[in-house]
Length: 428
Image (cartoon, rainbow, N blue to C red):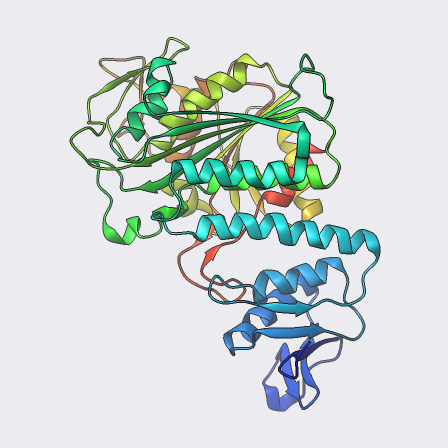
């Protein structure tokens, strides 16, 4: 701790009137005080921490009474920023709380850091390598993996991933990572995780405008979130066999890029007519879901920054959840409540699966113009690549992964939301 470290205290008392009506932050010669006058202390602490960071303070000591694990974490969520180093001298916590805090700092910060990286620094191969490094560090010898990339994808029938990724000079990559703490190669796979890892999305020939493209370095947020969830679960003692499948590619414009009207033939026999090259996430996820389904896991979860429709419905505060399985949906929402993260279930019904007609293939990759429920039709598209989709499958449209601009409790950039919830679910 240096002389430039600001001391931060908590108080149940209201701030002096000179700081403004209902002020949550005040300052004296001894440091700053966060005033917890609201019913829910954690959002107050996070917003106050973001204000402290906004004042240029980069080193703090959390001191005095009232600090526990969740309050420390709320402070870090608001104080952390993608620009510059932040230093926190943490208060005394129990050993269990200290261990959990260190795991969150390691894993959730990894997720936020990797999502915030510019696409120039993080291509498909770099994303796969970063995931391997994190999980190998946490899982040790229980982690093995296989990488398939470029033309090998086409030769092995991963036509969605290869077709989307072939327009880039950086080859598409499929990472299949196996966490098997049993040490038994014949042990059943309990859970499969399938993540969309589009490291930059121009929209392809269905080109995005600049205002929509500028944040597309974060289109691999689903892959990062699932990697972090597995890492967090491992750090908390996960003892089940889990396979992580990341479908990584750039969606670019070039002479070799995917065109409108092209038809993709998948290994499960489905054919898909591409009528919008900006609906590419579902095309790469389909390959991962086919692989996952063959393993017949008890639970299959996919996560993707899949649609603007989900974000229009929920903003940046909630992740959108889709499933035909009511019991499983209830388990995830219970995990979200326990971890203090926000998920909201959006509709997914059998009739949504009829919203994708094609004149030339089994499916269209976008819904017909008469059906405007874009997030639900995207989830319905994925269901065609999940065996037994009515039970044991969750689809998460990651609306809360990334913020283009700062708000009162978050800096601009990645949030890491969803990692803790999914880790909690993996441990059930």
